[in-house]
Length: 411
Image (cartoon, rainbow, N blue to C red; front, top):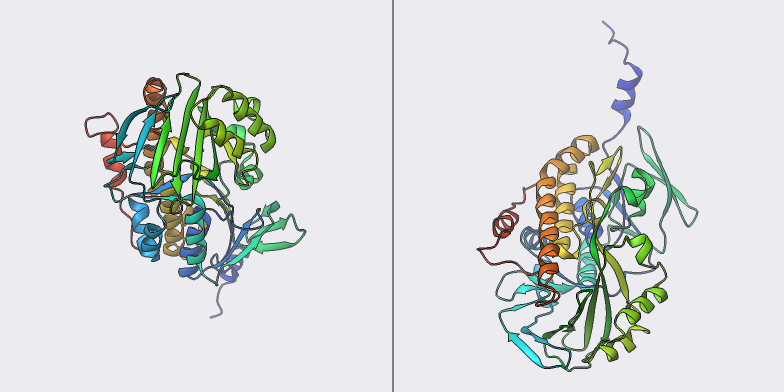
């Protein structure tokens, strides 16, 4: 007896292989982490990055909780610890430079020194994750996605360079201002929630001769944070952080041009004292100056068809959470693992990715909002403690315990 003829959709399903070719947009934290795990699980991986090389500069960021487990499974945790900021403590000074307090138990940027968490410069962590992803991952620097069109079988991508290629899946790991999200889900304004502040950071020489130390400069103004200065890279240089309080929307408040952003910072802090005028002088020539709004991204779904979002592109918590790096690394591990578990079936994998990760993301975004509210209340007394973990008696202690209890699956 001859077999029954296959329907057209059955023939298509039988000849279509499971997703194998994955394009990742963005080579910061989530992108290289995802590339590592996808490559390990047998996928063909390409990473496209608009910058001509790994981006320099950025904040001191924290690898915490489940992200420490991700790093250990990648074999990079020891390297991350070796490149940590290794701060010994912090002091707080007033506008005359008089020291108001000093502690060796915690820092404003990284929290409790005795904790297992690791504070590291963003660009140092990017380098470690990039090198870990291996020679089997294709990196396209100096390019980006211009358009993408998806159908039942693939996503056709046209790059800004003019080349066109097909992929089974595309993952946007290109940050809070994600072009991937804009191309697939629509304008940023639909998803961005401003948290009422702007943060700027740049590198300077270690003008204060800080020895693995951090200084918080307190100003008596409610519209600014003052400044945080920390020595980095074995005291060879320092990073300066300043903040501005404003509920004005980013599109109206923050210029796009970096030179105009620098003028905004200089004008806002023109009356600053202590050592800040010297640091502002170095801002004008800093090659890694960065300024952006503290904002979150909230979306009903992180995927559409064969395109998914990862990290800040889909669920940014903002620096106010102190958890953005952790969430991106954990998200990358979960997404890659679910794609492996589903045999490349993106529908099943994307659904499982969201089901597992959404509660974790929601808790971390809640922390950011609560930290912002607390910071506003305490701005006159305590400046810049964005990532400080509250004591056990605080309202956020239970949330932090649940975040810390998040366990990785084995894939």
